[in-house]
Length: 633
Image (cartoon, rainbow, N blue to C red; front, top):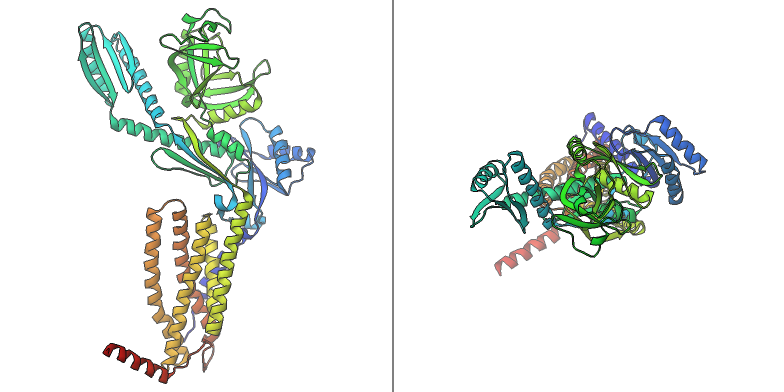
């Protein structure tokens, strides 16, 4: 009686061993590090490159705690403090070639053998690790404007390809108006547009001297385009965050037109804001040669204080000179495949750009038809457009070209990073920003750790005083529960936040309920005159149903939080649900296993060390009489 089969002890032993191994990395902390990785999957750090970086660090006299080359082709250098970390990054960046980035990071300080077993610490959230929080507002009106501009281009191209002649194509607010002098041309255009551009609503109007088609985008298409713009912006932000080398970033939609970005552990908040907050994209447009006064940089000086002529836009270059460009955009930044900082033949900062196949075809055709004319590269950022360069096209070029005009190499690197990470589908701006310092995060960790520790000690003292040896068993089961829970969260690489710590503390409080139920059941059986061995067996068996019922109802509540909650609520729910599962296992399996080890091997057990098991019959009789009196009244 009260003996476990060997496989149950083996199962408990394996669970404890796995829990210890995967919990251990959380106690080693993190150290400042520099992660060197390729911008693209094809760019990997190899042994010769790592040897070069090692030599650079040695030459710069920067000591390294450890370094390694992981299976993904990234090199990791760990340093004793942040000063050496920054010195190390500067030495590494000086030796890095194009296609690689060096990011400041915090990495686990656990020993290599734990790394080899895949044991890693839990990620810490923004409130525990420190970092930056951004809330960005996407300009949905601009997204709708882009859709209208795109459909205008499609209409123009479609009519031109089918040789349907129109007298004017203009935009008025959210409407596109196409004018025709001949009604036959209008009828042909109506049929063509209705058949090919089904996303548009078309209305006809007639006047004495011309016919018109008025086209508007269907409301559901506008809504779809805005949602797509929001998703593309989220993807672009994720690409930019990856460039920063941040582990476990949070980039998610917040409402219909906002994006939440949380970067835990970022040590350079200013650079993060600079990269995420910038909305730079590139536009290629032809210069309006017909309005130029000559070939020089002051060709459009006459328009400095004058509005731009019809079908043109006026912008200024880096020197403050006005430049008139055509309204038609030849190519935008979404066609860019790669962008790398570099220098031109005069030693000036430049960005070398490669486009995709479509972008290359557009550029070939445009440059072939406009040799000896000027083409402008415009940097569009936060509703401000700057002409980077507007050189004369000397010959046809394709998918590779160079943009100059940046004031320094830093600006060239930032522009290359932004273009490489992808273009934004719609402009956006930071409307909320906050920084959580590492010291505040460490303070939160300390407070959370103390809350769990003191709670555990208080529960342990009470259980031991009240239930004696069975209380010790309950405390051991509770410790095993905490070990299983932390180990499981580490295996899942869970991001721990303050609500998660609250859920751990709550789990401890709830887990002890199961042990109290078991101990009270055993006490009742002893009081009823059952032998100690029988009381243990009956107590555990009868308590199991109650434990299961109460935990299942709590689990259902936790799953509801997980399904309908978001952000910190979901984090709380995950820890809560996992804690319930580990609580059942530790209370039923681990606790019973320990009791079996203590009492199961004995031939004769006269009494159990479970606190007061005396049944006071006089007191019980008095209580019964009191209850009867109350019922009678």
